[in-house]
Length: 113
Ligand SMILES: [Zn+2]
Image 1: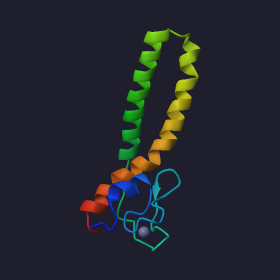
Image 2 (image 1 turned 180 degrees about the vertical axis):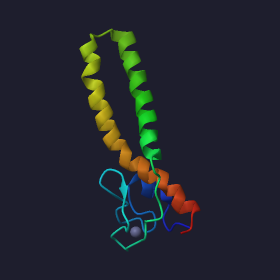
Image 3 (image 1 turned 90 degrees about the vertical axis):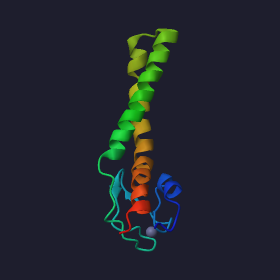
């Protein structure tokens, strides 16, 4: 069983065993060890699940927002073409690491490796 509550540690992208070391390196790669207490993290990975989660959530949010803006204001097409890609890129960058860590968190809770 995990030593720290997995969901808060996952949302902070911290090691799910000690709660202090880094869980990820780069945007979405699991580290082999957390670097704080050398916790072994090699057996845990969420695969492409976080990517799919971000695509579905962000896609639904942006499509809904674009439909609301279009229905209320009927702006020219370039108004849609400029802000939405920026929002999508920023949102994907902001959501990817926490979603990866949060989807790995149940593995620490339920898989005792
Ligand atoms: Zn650790």
